[in-house]
Image 1 (cartoon, one colour):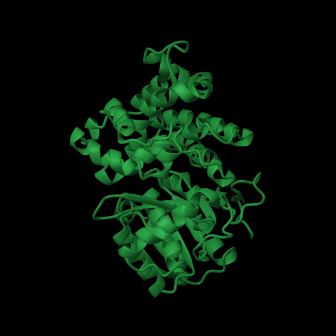
Image 2 (spheres, rainbow, N blue to C red):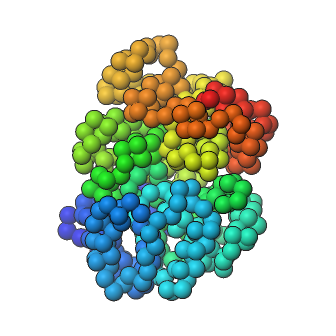
Length: 422
C-alpha cells in the first residue's frame, strides 16, 4: 500500500488493531489524485462505479477531474442520490453497479450518497434487487446488529467483498462507520442496517472539495458530529475510557472548528481538522460501543419529512440532553466543562448571556447552534404538531431510541421531546 508524495496515508483507528475491516485515511493530496492512485495500487480495481454529488457535477469541475483521473478504470457513473437515501434509488444504483461488473465503488459527496453506497455493498452481496426485499433483509440484519460489533462471524448474510472509497464533502461522518440507513419511499420509514464490511476501506479528506458545500450543509452536518460525540459520552452503559476520551477530543475539534469556519470560510486547516474530528467522534462505533440515543433515533424519522441530516441534531440535541439529564447529568457537566475550556467557544457562550455555573449542557449547545445560524425548532423546518403522532410511533421502532439513556418505550416520551422542540 504505497502513498503519494505529500500524502498522509494511515489507519483511521491505529489503536484498534483487531478491526476486521480497518478503514484508512488519506489527506495531503487532491482527491482525484489520491483516489486514482489507490484504485490502481492499493485495490487493483479495474471497474470503478462512481456515485457523485449532483451539485458538484453541475457547479464544479471536481467530478470531471475524478472521472479523468480514473480513466479507463471508470466503468460507470451515477450522479446523485436524493436526501435520506430512498430505497428505490439505491436499488437502481445497485443494478447499475452489477450490470457494469463493478469491483470498486467510489463516492464523492455527502451522507446520503455514502449511505447508499454502503447499502449497495450488502445488496450486491446478498442479491437484493427490489425494494420489497429490503424490509425482511433489514430485520434479519437488525436481529444481529447489537452483537455484531466488529466481527462478521455468525451474521446471517453474505459479507460484502467490493471495496468502498469515500471522498466526503460534508461532516455527517458516514464515511467512518459500518452502518447505513435508507428510506422507504412509500412509508417514509428510515431503516438502519450494518455489517463490518459495509464500512469504507479508504476515506480521502480533501478540504478544497468541501469549499463549494453550502454553508448550512457544512455547519449542520458538523453539528451531527457533535451529536455523535455528545450521545456517545452521555451513554449510561459500557464505560470505556478510550471511547470517552475520544468523544471529548472530538468535541474540542469540531465545535471550535465549526465556529472557526463559520467566520473564515476558506480556512483549509480548520476544515481538515473538522473532517478528521468527525472520525474521532465515531471511534465509539469502531470500538463496538453503541453510543447513540434519542437525538439520533428521532432524527432518523425527521429526515424523511425533509429535515436535513444535521438539522435534526441542531433541533433535537439540546432538548434531548435536558430530557436525559436526570440520569446522566454528571457526564453532561463534564462536556460542559470541555466547551467552556475552549476560548473560542467560551467567548460565544458569554456573548449569548450564559454563565458557566448556571447554564446546563442543553443551554450551551443551543447557544452554539444559534451562533452557527442553525434552525432550533421544528416549526422553523416546517414540521407541525400534526406530524408528531407518526413521528413518535416511528421513533419507537428505531434502535437508537431503545438504547437512549432513558429507554424510550412509550410514544408519550417521544412526544415530550417533540413538544420541547416545537
